[in-house]
Length: 257
Image (cartoon, rainbow, N blue to C red; front, top):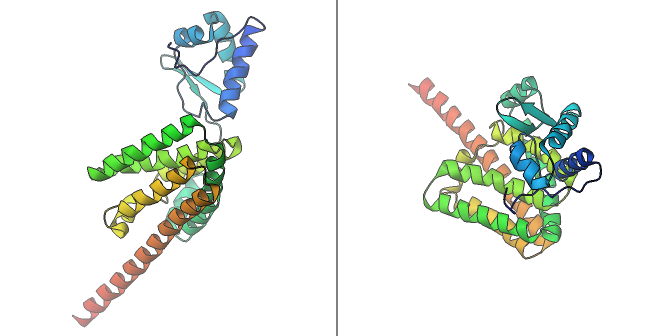
């Protein structure tokens, strides 16, 4: 492992327990997230400066606590910690009853406004570099009209803002909420692009959020985050109204022959 590894060397006191404590702390802090694959035993032992038997002992302890899942032939992974925000049955129910979508947006508006505010106060240099890199990727995706990359970067940016808040409860709770976004239950960015025209407004809104965080301006960061979520809600409401008008017009046309 190189010196870019996030794992620290372990001293000689109760070695296995020290390994457990370090990995647990990284999970609590949201550095290691569910599904994250740990380095190989050799790499991890080298990074932490411990023997492989002691490392295996630590991994067994973490596995017994339900924090790590060891998959033979694949490696060790951070276990599912927050679970799904909703059961598959409830997800299907929400998908059939669109009004629940606006509750989802309301929740996100409040949480993301809060996350952006404290991110502006707490973001480290590494956080700021990460945000700047993602915005750069979003700009490139927009210029290339790469919708798939744009959608992927969009979600990563929201996750990065929450991470920059340094609030571990928020980090873990929003991971579950963003899982709904990944599943496409609520959030359809392709539709938003049709309302936006080219996606340029969405890009600028994300730039505004990041710039306010880089500037250390909590008020501006919160306002930018809320403005973005308000735009999402307004766009979907306009889209629903437009769809309803088209359906009525189509029925009238059929009746009129």
